[in-house]
Image 1 (tube, rainbow, N blue to C red):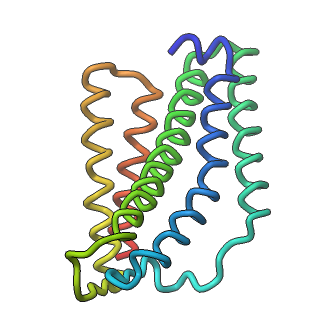
Image 2 (cartoon, rainbow, N blue to C red):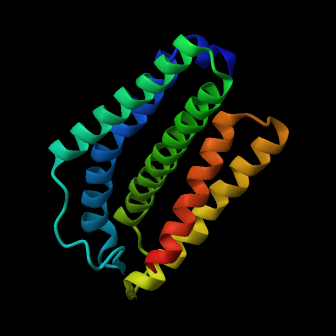
Length: 178
């Protein structure tokens, strides 16, 4: 990934685009869920999360993340220390992997909700409590770990290793929250 070490902007731009797409995709997924799926499936992800974070907090934290990525790249560009370059690529991969997985999952939710819009062959309602819902999510997230793991075997790179680490972190986080 020499190109990402020579010019940080494509990687950081991708990371920030994915990060800033998270909130609108979450909102759209939540809206579609309550419009079309809630009558059939009731799931709670994290019971203790009663108050939603402010959108402003999301903007500030993602901006700081982008600045931190640039700062690490700048340290690398000034020092040419390969360890800092590897750290930058790993962290960039972790950020891209985290938001890519989240955005894909939100998009899946929107598409699934749209399936329920005109469903005629479904009756009844499933209700998942948080521990079971988080375990289901961990299993679904594990598929990304497998995909990133296979890509890493084929193309061992710190960027891919970062995305692989992100997917493993998300699996472990959900298992611990279950």
